[in-house]
Structures are given as structure tokens and as C-alpha cells.
Image (cartoon, rainbow, N blue to C red; front, side, top):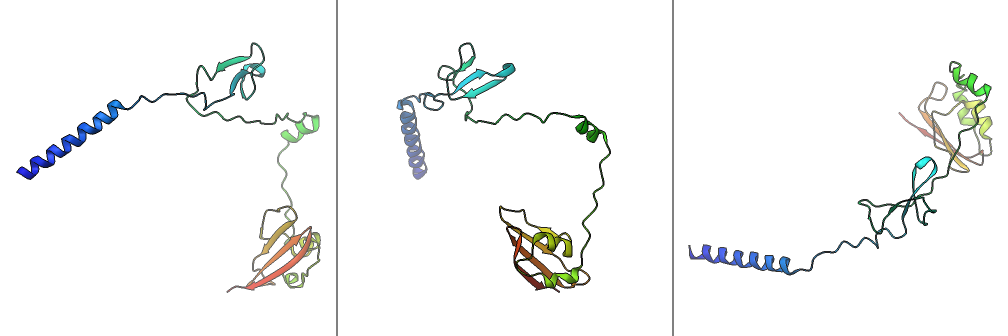
Length: 176
């Protein structure tokens, strides 16, 4: 029983010390002048608020963040203004017309895959082999097309790499 009392007294002493530290600590100060320096909320076109890093034109200021700080972070961002293209009679007719069904690229001859060599143009490959089964997004000058097994070239995956519209390598892998 005596050990229990010692443990309780120790816990009470620690609690009192903790409360003293918290009570004597200086109060935290909310100084937000360093958080949002130079952010101004101004009235833009048609009254739309605009946040900017330069002072507002006279009569355009909507909020002073130094005197009235925001409760959220504000990051200045410049978005280019784009205007929609002018509408012409042709655009209006196209909008009303039923969608066209696109003609698919002819499948090509799968047997021709084994004859593709480095230096062949992208257009010739497309004409002979047809559209690839998978194509990487064209990153600058590089592209990669993959043809999966098909009648005429069974059990073979053909990967063709392009640079500047010309074949740079052809890889053929047998799959079962």
C-alpha cells in the first residue's frame, strides 16, 4: 500500500510541475505580418477578386492582409487569359452536325513486321503494318510503337522505336 501512495504522490508532483510550466510560459503571439507579406486583394474586371503581389490601384483594394490576416495560405498565381476562338458559320454548322464516324486505319499486314529496318519512316511503317496496338506518348523526338501477336506474325511482340520520325530499333520477342 505504501508503494502505491509513493507512486500517486510522484504523479501529483509531476502534474503540478507541468501545470506551473504551462502557466508561466509566455503567451503565444499571432504575428502574421511575416506570413502574407505583400499580398493584396483587389477588385478585378467585373468585380472578380484578384490576389496580387503589388498594391491595388486607388479604389480597387478589397482587403488589407496586414490588418486583417487570412485564415488560409495565399499563393500568388498568374494564369494567362485565353479568349475563345471566334465563332464562324462553319463552326456553328459543325456543332449542329452529327458526329462523323472515323475510318479506322487499315490493319496492315502482320507478316511485314519482320521486314521493318532502321531508317524506315514512320509513315511507311504505318502504311505497311497499320496502327500499333499500343503507342507511347510522343516525347519530343522519341516514340515507341508495340504490335501484339496477330495472324501472320503469331506469338511475337514487335516493338519499334522512332527518333525524328525514323525507325531506330526493332525488337521482336516470342511469347507463348
